[in-house]
Image (cartoon, helix red, strand yellow):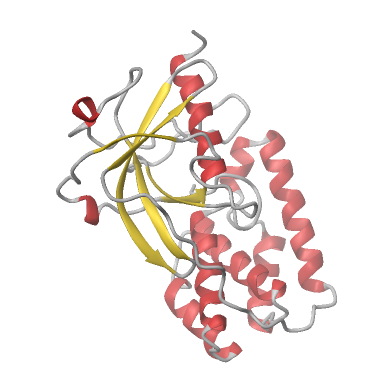
Amino acid sequence: MSAWDAAVFDDDLAADVRDEYRDLLEQRVPDAEATKRVVDAFGAVTDDEDRATFWLALAAAQHIVGRLDDAVKAHALQIIDDGVGMELWESVGGADLARRQKMLGRLRAQLTGPQPAPKRVRRPRQVTTDLVAGDILSLTSDSGAVALFRVLRVEDQRDGQRPIVALLDWQGGAATSETVQGLPIRTNEGVFLYADDDPTPHPPAPAVFAPIEDQGRLGWRDAGFVHVARVAPSPGDDDVEMIHGMHWSTMSWLLAAWLERRDGPR
């Protein structure tokens, strides 16, 4: 489950679908061709959860810009009405399930109601970063626990430069360039919390993030990250896949909460 919350685009696949679709519109690709390209790129998924995520994300993205395709709408409504992809949400239950159900009801009303006029989609503000490969960042929780991150590389994406940042396998206090050199990348096991008190098992993968500024233009410093060192990039950093895209502020909140669960009060 790649979702970090219940909203349509609080999911890595959904965010990718939205970004790909908007990127095509920004390039002035005609509506029907843009839909076809996105379906060709993402629509072959067979897993129920991913299939639901794809069609809901594409329908929502099209609705927002006033370009909802009839076939996409039909797919999305069938997904909602048949409860496709809801098994894991139902297994979690509680407030998470309630938020997901509320979102689906709201999305269904948007898709079946009057559609907004088509909007011209402009390229997003291009952002830059002062981080470079090898930069080491730290994040300290309220109880004093420390997480360390290494910038693997900086990628050029549709909205500008985006650092690719890995959570390092570290459990200690303040670090120096000597102590962090060569630290391995940690997996994402236990990092994500999908219910109030239960870290849902997550398929193990490198804990690698592509954080961006939020709408208030809050960057890594604003989110509580501190630059502690710069080391030589490690062999293979360019080949490590980004797993989680989110705002710096969201990443800070997630990792601070994980530190509290991992280390407990001091």
